[in-house]
Amino acid sequence: MSYDTQLFKLLENKRIADGVFSWTVKNSELSALAECGQFVNIKVPGRTLRRPISICDKDEDTLRLVFQVKGEGTKIMSEMRVGSEVEILAPLGHGFDIKKGRRYCFVGGGIGVPPLLFAAKQTENPLVITGFRSKNLVILQDDFKEIGSELYLTTDDGTDGIHGFVTDVLKEHIGEVDEVCACGPLPMLKAVAAVCKDKVKCQVSLEERMGCGIGACLVCSCKTKVGDEEVMTQVCRRGPVYMAEEVFFGG
Image (spheres, one colour):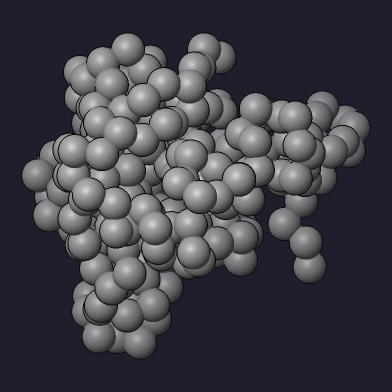
């Protein structure tokens, strides 16, 4: 894993849903290294700890980062001006393992949806299932359509798309795909893994708070299976993407 801390230029800071913002940041050297499922750690002015944000997409010299305002740090990020320079540690973690010749289903919940766009772009005829609490939080639907996805939208309250959960749709289409990649809240990942069990392989991207992003602070340690052993691994280094059978979901 190759990463570095460098300055990126903020080219776009755009609100795309209630409390959700999309950044485009430019740095040719580090953008070129990024792989789907990886993340970055952003230095926020006036704050000590960096903010981990998944990589939504990239091109030759830019990264797209989509984040939700959840506290003071991300609020500051949402108000930063285009043209600003941002110190970013990137790219971090191990992402999705995408193989040619397989049909993938990408299942995302809430702010877990953004990293699936980059991953889906690496495949042909992707099946994409996205879930949100309500219509005002729906993001990236047009982006998935543009890459030719078979796209399904669910909302918990029925204000947009299908009234229900991502697993309702996944159960109907599980026989049409070779592998599932999922990102979202842990209860959703647990439910997706249960649907996939004994049917198809399932990769899950864990949403853990990563203080340093490089394995030094141990904040993101979680219980996992490595072979026949139960061990604590650091999500920022071993993950954020795991095979579903490696994760202890609890309950």
